[in-house]
Image (cartoon, rainbow, N blue to C red; front, side, top):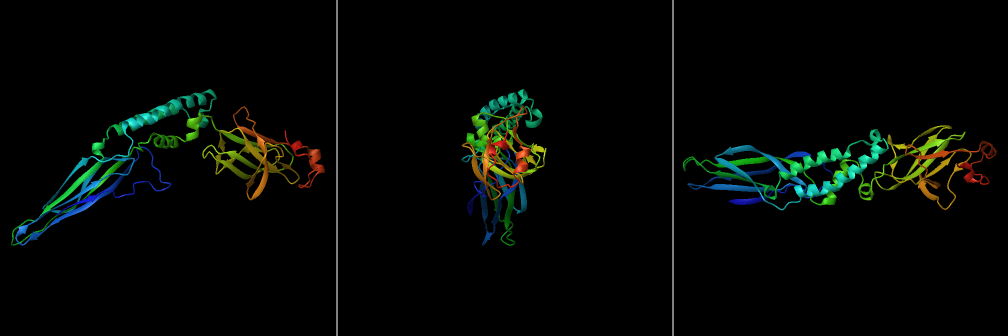
Length: 338
């Protein structure tokens, strides 16, 4: 009896949220098959079982190892075979990296010009070129004729009509796979960009060094601050609140221990103390919800000499003492700004 088992043993596409790093390797056991032969009267029979294993899209077989679990008058064979491929070839890799390396050169130039190597790293172009050579080397060893593994287990009954011994071959293969990425240029570039912490929009629109957000309380009262900014990492407008600043205090706005970053010089703030608010009341203002509150936010666009977005909250002490009620409306809001 001859049967063929399709060895695509895993989902064709990664589940949501599942991500792989380029050139990462993994091992898995595949083609666990058994051939078994017995006697038919005084006639010895034979058996052969076959399995074809193809890796998931983006993965290639880099090595394999036979695992004999049990065998008696049995055997096996294995060979690479052709199959439709959904993986980055050598030409796909070259096309994806060409634009990225050119972009990296401009990135390095900007970082060096402003002396920001310590903050943003240096030699992105060199690191990309190194990764390209490794990626290209791995991809060049792969061809469509080696896209799948064909294995066979064989067995034949043996002995004589008197003792009639069965034959079997129970085998499996341990396969090592390497992730080369998808053949689609844009998808492959997105994976590379993600590994280097660069957004697609930054690559396509031209790189602008992300800025941090700095707030300072120049008032004699403690204040609470809410902000809204365009997140560099998600490309989404995000509101954050509340940040408490004591009188005279200033700091970089952070979340989860990491400073917030943006490439948009426009952002919005709202602040309040026990006796006043710093809010927006003009055509450039916006109203957004943060912490369950609807806040009229003031537009900010000042960038200091360090390249940080800077907001300084000041107040007229005489007026603040005269208006202790937070809900007072006869104090012009703009007089609380510089």
